[in-house]
View (cartoon, rainbow, N blue to C red):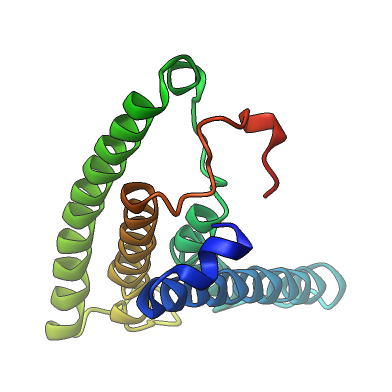
Length: 182
C-alpha cells in the first residue's frame, strides 16, 4: 500500500502489516542464529574433533521455522514468485477480478494447510512426540511453526484481498510492474 492509502486503511489492516514485518524480523533472526550454530558445529567438528548432538537438528528446525514464519513478510512485499504476463494484458477491471480470484483461491489453499498443520501440531502435543535423536526435542515445538506460519500468511492474504477489493492496493493497474517501488 502507498503512504496515502496506508493511513486510510483500517487499524486491523495496518496491524496485520506490522505483524507481517515482525515475522520477517523473526525469520531473519532464526536464519542468523542458524548460521551461528552451523559455524559453532563446524568449529567443534573440524577444529576440536568433537561430535555434535543437537546442532544439525536445531538448524533444520530453525530454517523450517524461518521459512514458514517468513511467509507473511514475503507476501507483504510481494516477493513470492508471480507471473504477470496475463494480468498485464487484461483491462483494469478484469485484472482486479483476477487478483480477487487468485487471492481467494490462495486463502482457501492456505486454510487447508493451516488445518492440517494444526492437526499435526496437536497430535505431537497430545501424544508428547519426541524426535528420534539423542537430543529428543519435543516435536510440538518445531511443528508449531506450521500452523502459526500459515495462519499469519492467511492474515496477510486477507489484508491484500481487502486492499485489492477496496482499491487500496498499490499495484495500480495503470503502472507497469517494473515501474513499481517495493
